Length: 470
Image 1 (tube, rainbow, N blue to C red):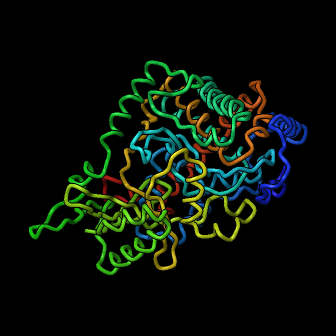
Image 2: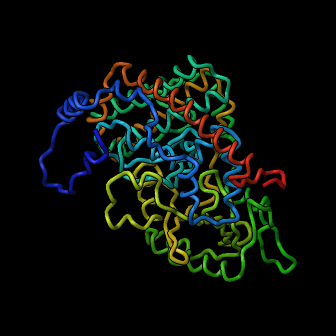
Image 3: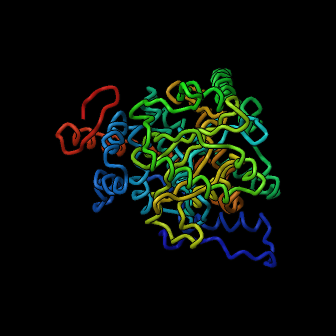
């Protein structure tokens, strides 16, 4: 089924007739006759496959030119960092893959490193998706394939052999299937109440001792990762009592007075996108300083600022990240979004609010010089599982957990019963995607090798962090 056949969500109408989850499950199962689950197993680059380096170069347009070599250097570190930074390449590849035609709000970049811990407004730590720059409406399969590709490639780097990688991918898909099946008959509001608390994971995710130890260690780190802890690490008090960011290039650099003024003005406009009571709370904070901050792999080169604010005094700091939101990687391959979502900052915010079980209370959007941005807390009890620590049972558990979380996200914003009907209760889809992920893992290694070779030949400029090479 081509992307042109993707069914967009129906027009909102509370007066429409209810269709039971059993009937929707049966409709999803019928879709197997159109697009078999086995058809997802094949990855074969088409003859006219776009050059991945040209796609990345196109994706670099509009970014800050002086930071593009840093982005390329980070992507060149390993096949996994290449995969993380090349969502645009995978989007092009997935655009010709088979789909069942069931739409959801997709994360668009649901690889292993985009799941993690963060704090709820009630100051509890939850485990969930935590990156939404590429969010849009598309086929649910694209998110799942992005996830299993990352499982395969990360598994290679963690020393897993081919059989072990296949098992890890199958556990990931199994986690997705099991949870979407559990959720299909659940009340819709009940699904929106669900959270995944580290240390209190459901029976669906029986945790092994090693994984439990890793989660416990990362949870302890998350509980100490807040605004007060960040302050002495990145800022200092001047002799006159004011606070300023410390230069730490290329990650953190000072900005001009005019840029600082533009960011403050943008934050004033951003406050109107918050619920009124939160806007009132924010109005009691005042900006002390603004810096430019480089983040991630795929985001390097986009404009991102870090604002330091104080409320009741020096013991009440708040760090807000003002991050540029570009066009989503899958944008060229899906039907156009409604007009209200064409502001990319708003698209990211609304997508995050749909997919995440709990959101940052200060999540909003704004613009600077005609560019779109979203705003969020920089340190909000955040921490991530170091994927490189994981092997064996703990690697399989983490993949299964991410698969289950992805299913819950899709169930919040899509038709869980139809997806569950298509996926089924057998391991057919698990095995198909394990085969696909192995082939796509090979493709990722080849694409990464192309980048490394282009850098060696001087065709692509790259800055290797920790050195002066470029």
